[in-house]
Image (cartoon, rainbow, N blue to C red; front, side, top):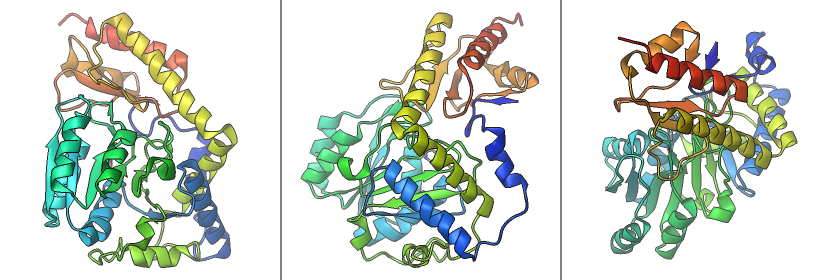
Length: 347
Ligand SMILES: *Cc1c(COP(=O)(O)O)cnc(C)c1O
């Protein structure tokens, strides 16, 4: 099987970590694994002095935990709704009854940062919620520009980096990000099932609200002191996080990001060759989103007959290929060739 859907192709030896017996987690050995995970992850995202909470959940629970513990404590939110994932912040705030203002961004377009500054200057929200990479379209937003605006008006910056962590340059302290969330099935290139919440030093000073027993920040941070989670963790998945981060730090985070970027650029040259349009104004490294011309209705089924997965979308003719996995340039040549063949099947 070749998968260009998240999490992408995972190395066999990393997959095998979760194929064995499950070691007990209330041990000093597992505490050591988690403490090392925290150190390596903080290092990789430039969050020295901060903390990482580990949730056994998908990424959305990490987003929800931030809304319930952090945004609820601070008050109001300003949200960039640039697609499926931006809209999720909106739905979470609606669901939990948090006052929020929304700036809608058209599909695959960048933010009008001047208009954004005017709106933030006027409404002075307590928290800013956005995505670094809006994965539904492939559009990357400029976090440094957003951060400058937030800092001018005393707004705390929360960024969903679920599909940009380890795929784009990220430096929480340097970029002034207070809270970031990610999950295992994207840049970490691991099975789904665990999510991470990064809290910068500033964010740790907040008097968190207690709205969610399982995802309570104070309780999780207290347990983290001894390298534990309050409830049963996805033990082997956190062992895979450990192995992945050792490998990434050995390669160098900059090199990990560069390798993903090179694959993305390579695939985009293939898109140009076959005439597939890429709508993103500023395409992110993690995925390439592109429009095919014909046979879009059969593309995914036909690819699956060859054991290949790509990601469809709600938009007609629009597909996404992930660059997070350990596929090769040859794999990408084969994939693009096959998509083109299917596109040209007579119907
Ligand atoms: C994948 C993703 C999520 C979370 O999705 P889950 O299915 O809950 O893991 C959130 N935001 C972005 C930008 C994503 O790419």
